[in-house]
Image (cartoon, rainbow, N blue to C red):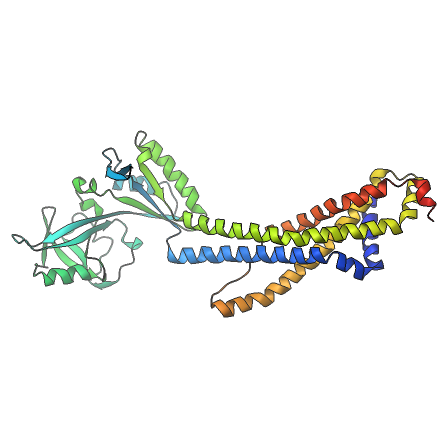
Length: 400
């Protein structure tokens, strides 16, 4: 430990003796580290921005458990006769497996025709069913449905504004519906200007219809980090529940978009990091130059130390410690310069792009700088340290 402290002191003394020369020698490290840190901080900031953008435009915290009811062979799709059917009982079973941080709903969507009795006029629309009305944000025009309303025993149904408009234009009675052999009344209308849609509870759906367009179970987690964990639980549950058909169960997520963004940013970091590595290489050569000059000036000191019992490993350790000290100083200056530079650049980026962008200073960035300082010090300090350790005491002392 004393040897290491002594070596660090000698490294600092070398810097004090010729500070300007040392500064220009490690300028490459300063520029390289500053560039590298800036790229890492910008990359982490871009990744955070991409996550927020994807989360705001997609349901990144949602998962869908669905049956694979269509198969593809040589580009031709055909119906899968062996797909497992997800039921409300399955949804209730899964609901008991998760805590309040995971919410779920049973959802069904099917295209069908709406027509008047004894009339050929028909409107193509969708019948939609979901078990948890709170999971859907509906803008009600009148007659808002409650969770209690959406039951199989309810005599009411709810339709979209588009379906209501089309029914009236086709002169189809809008007071009563015959749905799956049961009479239903329109109790409310929700705003949907794009799709003709009818809303019911999934327990009202006949199995024959469910087998045509199988339902899905939607999940929403509290934090993004839960997505992969919930996905693994669902796949394990599918293997147990459908031992021979679990391969026809899939879990859809939006994690792919996050992964694509992360891969693109990682490529950016690697390419720019390799380019800035040239500056670090030049800086390392500067450190080696400083140490070689230091050896020349301190040759008598090295000879005296060896004459009084210092071993080669002590000399090597001394100069390696000095090399690491100098490269660490250059890396630290580069880090400070990068942080100052980002404080100037980020506001310009915000003003130019009109977006809320922030750099991200992470622990990994500081660890990379620390490792880089040690690596440069060891790599470019090895040759000077080896050369110093090879000096013979008698030759070194003769230069006094």
